Image 1: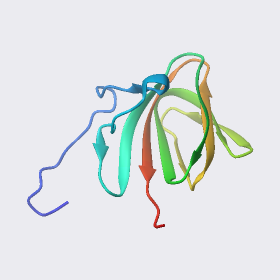
Image 2: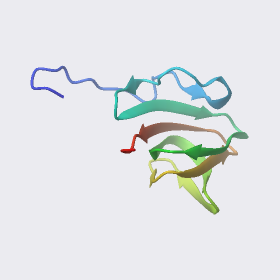
Image 3: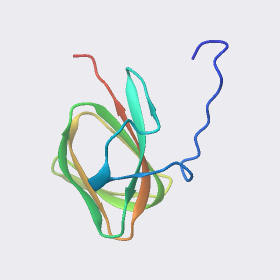
Image 4: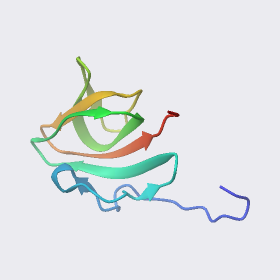
Length: 108
C-alpha cells in the first residue's frame, strides 16, 4: 500500500460467500500476488480434492471443517487458521462453515 492509499476493511460475515459449486470470479480482493474469497460450505457440503499450486491460507470464521492435505486429515475449527504450501487439498463440513481462503502465488 502506498502512503496515500485508503485503508480498506472487509467484514467477513457481511461479504457474499462463494459456494463451491457456484465459484467463479475474483473473490473480494485480488492482486498479482494473492487472491482472497469467502467460502461457504453448506451442512454436509464438501470441496473435492484439488491440486493447489500456490500457498494457501484458510481461516474458519464460523463452523468447522475436516480438511485433508495430501494424505493427512485435521479438523479446523472456528477462529483457527491453516497455512499450507502447495498440496492436494479437500474439505467437508457436517454442520456448515464460512471460511476465508487466500491463495498466494509462488515464484515459478
